[in-house]
Structure formats: C-alpha cells, structure tokens
Length: 336
Image 1 (cartoon, rainbow, N blue to C red):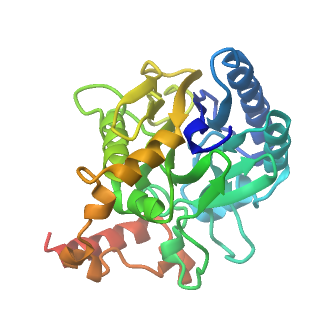
Image 2 (image 1 turned 45 degrees about the vertical axis):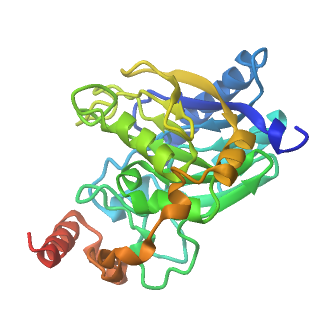
C-alpha cells in the first residue's frame, strides 16, 4: 500500500458457536478454533482482497456465567497479556494482520478483587491496545467498568494508529451509548470495531433489529467504518439467551457491505475497508460532517454525573444488588 489512496483491504467479522467453559482450562480449545478461523479468513479470501483485520465477538473465550466477581476471578479470569494473547500475536505476525480478540474476563493485580471484560488489539508487533468495557450490561454483568474505580488512570478509549488505519473498539452494550463511540472518534478512530454478544430479541432481525440499526447509526454519525462481530452461540451453549450472529461490516455512509445471515453458528463475512476514501470524505465534506458540526456546549446533561462513579472502592458494590442500587440512584436524578 503506497499512499492513503491505496489504503484498502479486507476486514473479516468472525462469529463463533462454542459451549461456555466452566473454568479457564477450557479456553485453549476456543483459541485453537479461532486461530483456524483466522487461517480460513486470510487464505480463503486471498484471491479477492488481502484480509488485514480479523474481529471476534464478546465472550468468545468465556462468558460471565457466575453471579459474583469472586467466582469469575477464581474460575475464569486471566491477566493480560497471557498465553492466549501470545498465540494471537504469533498468528498476527505469521499473516501480517491485526486481530481484535474476543473478550477475556481479565484480572489485574493493580485492581484486586475486580474483574474486567476486556478485548485486545494484536498486530504483527504484538499487543497494541487493551479495551475494558466501560458500560457493562447492568444489572446482570458484575465486571467492573473503569468508571467504577476511583484510582483508574489509564485511557478508557484507546485508539491504535496502525498501517491499516486508526482502530478503536468498544464492547456490546457500549454501543447503545453514542458518547462512547464519539469519544473513540474524537481520539482519532477511523475504523470502529464492535466486539459483541447481542442476544435475541434485540438482535439482527425484525421487528427490533437493534444490532443493525445501531451499527449503521454509529457509522453515519461518526463518519467511520464499523466492523462488528456478534456472538452466535445457540441457546444450548450460552443459556439463558439465544445469540443471533448477523456479524457485519458497514461503511462510513451506513451502507451494509456484508452481513452474515442471522442465526446461530460459525460464520465469516469479509468486505473491503477503504481508509483512503474515508479520509477523503472527512476532509472534503461540509454537509453531513457531524464531527465538525458537533455543538458540545449545548448539552448540560453532560455537566452532571448520573450513574455514580467510583463505586469500586467498595468491591461489594460491584454486584447485582449494588448495580440495582446505582441504577435507582441515577433514575432518581432523572426524576423517574
């Protein structure tokens, strides 16, 4: 690729259908299969366009099947980096690609007693960014948000400047908060990556179809590509929900470039990402240039805190009961 006008490549949105492991010993088999899927995506589409970005869904390694952070830490959580991220790094180097991993349940000795839901961007040179879900699906998810921790000083919305463009990621429920994707874009992101486990009935089909609506809307309002991988486990594998897949790639005008047929099961969809065209559009547009038209001073709602931050100082508040209390406090501020 010589020059921005040539910065065009294939992105692969991969979805999986695994049984959930009861403990961390079961994660290796999932990684084995996903490494094979990477080979399929890169090799299978080589006659058509070079696949340079491969994305996997939320809970690809393990789902939070336990109701307390303590159980998740004891049975499923891992530090990052780990043996699995090292295998992804070797695969990225082998093919000269960038991999957005499915999520890990992550432990970090800097934050004892806390578990994060985290995804890694890994390139040929190794681990580039680690994103921790800022908006867990409360009340059910008891992972910590960085917002919960009063001593959290790391970048909440990291963006990696890579040879295939500036890449930023957010996880599943984050995408129902336009502010999260706006901040990634403000931090420079050109390709917004969605690592998700979006269940029925909010999935990829009418009458609700939140998955497709939100992916297209975030692409339009941020003038960005969206590469979105969704969980496709059957009800038997990840109860109590069924998971509809429908993984997709969307361009910066909201066009769906490729989408997996809705329904459970492994699938890979590939479409072109043209970063040169994106940069051109951002530079020349005066109309529908939402980034430049943003009137940030108009929104007093952002001058107050609704959902309370810093709750992780007392680890007992990071529980289903504690989440319910925090939701009630935020609703009270809104007058509900």
